[in-house]
Length: 327
Ligand SMILES: [Mn+2]
Image (tube, rainbow, N blue to C red; front, side, top):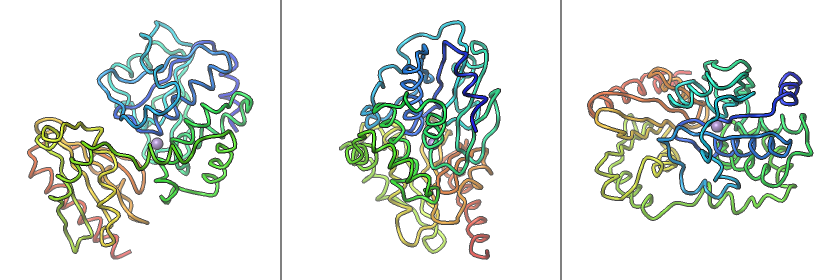
């Protein structure tokens, strides 16, 4: 199935790996799994993240996390690989330039439904719960002996977080099969579930109290919205990475079908996270605003005054909720 990529891997010596901006556990997990796997195969591997970006504290539990941006990019790589990255803009400007100018061949591994091709080769499976699920199948076919506990741990991390601890629609028979095979390497699945999926910091907890107490509901509570302002971050000493997961509390409310988290990044610039239940496709709304993602979890960016951004999102959400009711 992956013979063409396997052939390339045998022929290369130097590899650069690229993560997406605002990296989640699937992105970091797939990058560090690929790092260790290729290192085990004797390759020289560097891992890069746009330098302005931060990684959430919880993710530091992953083995080999220190290799990220530990070297400055060299002028030439035989191969460049992007992981969990659905569009060139998600790489960040500097990383995109390095991918395009320093790498002889480029490959993407991804599982996003809305994907725009920007590498020579694309390994895409939108039915995979995580990018790490695709990687495991690839690693197994390519050279199963190069999979070790570090590789398995990083792969498992992406699997639990992107599948919502095996609860989202994207969780399939294959997801569970991959999980069980990974656990056979000795992965501490209980620790990973607690630290990556359940645990929060005190400051992030305070942030969630603030924004959830001001949550807004529309259309018979089918739509729930929370907003994070720069004042919320200042008062609780938190950052964008600390918003992670808070919107899930809203979508877990029985009446809510769609939940939005609107985060003020800078003046008149908002990052929007969408979470939905069941068959409601949140990525259609994200795509309407130039973003994308998965059915139950997607994202986009909006620009303008706060109230205008909120109104636009609420009215477009209404359109899709009405359509959903009729189907
Ligand atoms: Mn992912």
